[in-house]
Length: 142
Image (tube, rainbow, N blue to C red; front, side, top):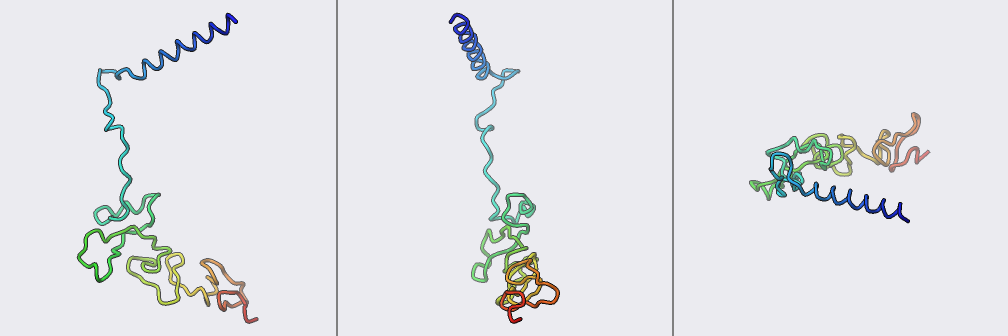
């Protein structure tokens, strides 16, 4: 029992020393401000007009900074947003390139998933060489 008590006493003294040094001022007598230690707010991807490079960040919802205002909102501030031009049908491949009726944006190209052999039913699904694509299915009609 004596060894265990001595060990616990030594452990308590060591922890007390660590806690005392944690609150001590850093060398030079200056303490770090709690305001400087606070994290900065996350970047806003909803207004990339002044900083279009923000769209290239990993957490960004899209790779390009596009003007997304409608005709009714013309002249309005904050119309630029980070947009994924690989999948967005209103900005397919580049800002402002809108896909036609019934088309989908696959890897930045407007395609018809109902009849396209290279994108049959979904983006990137290719039919075999001899098979066509009908109604989004490879060789549906035989």
